[in-house]
Length: 474
Image (cartoon, rainbow, N blue to C red; front, side, top):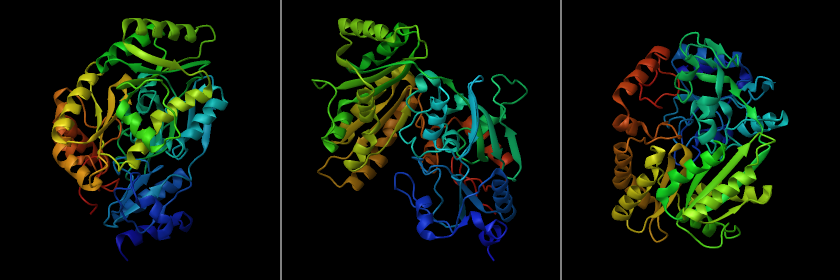
């Protein structure tokens, strides 16, 4: 009996799935660019069963790949193609444990779908601000394992800033449990933060305690055409000042990205009368019943029109129109797929340098990839831009993207590094960005990451080959 079969023999039969037709849904990555293999998928129903799984894998030195909603862009939740790892899905662990409305917090199993958590908070009259395009399928444990960003980071921060407590099964099968949703706890190292953004390489998150906020009573959403991309930072600053820091989203959309979407889905409508090179989707929200956000935004737009910073714009007159604005922003990745896919660059620089980066990176592509279509959009409020290169219709898409990846991407990453930025703003490392981490990662940080990995997971069983290259489990 081999090691995997020996480990499976120690598990409850009810949690083991061997049907390859079912398994296929767990072994292909979200972007369908990588396919792994595994002899079985494990679907525990409780923390105790997760511990049983991890202890068995530790005993027989079997690699274990944790999976939430399988929405990683970097194959972090996909097993290797060697067939020597088991996938563990937390989808059955999907219970809401508690909502404390007075404490503005919730506690839930890691397998809860993000949109279900948002709905539970809303039913309690509260807001869970973590919001992503994949929120109908991604699960909160995976969101924390990748330190998810999303559209509300400018006001509420990344996923790690919402974490009050975690429950984690460690690589030896023991349990780290610190779920108390305290706002202040200065009793030593903030250990829970080790597991946020670790992509399952240090342990398996099984439950979370998160901050909630009062649900907005007023939301104003505007779609704006801006004259110069260089004014992004000043427009954001004006919006934050004019509204008393009530800006929850400040999203940039290039005209080329919008055109890709409208070409792919001609039933959609352009929000404005005239085309412009650059657009901003601005959302202001407040829980106050007294402050008048309509007046604040109207005054802001009047000032921006007068200064020439914006040349056109419209404010959503209904929830339906607001949803239409967001539909345009959130479906750009789907439009890229329709046009043959894209080479993605998940870049972050200082907000003050974002416009300069976009202009300089665009010039790199124009010089080195004639005919390439740029799809540039992102979260301006936190300096994160998705700088994607789409093949023209007249070429072989696969060959074109391979050439961009080999010949152009490095120049874009070099530019980001020169500007003090990063090659991975919110997607993480997974398997696909290991070489980028070696090239651009701070040596001291990478060394410390290796030390933590070795200390917590000396057998190398937790998500092998992700985030930090490590040996195959002995």
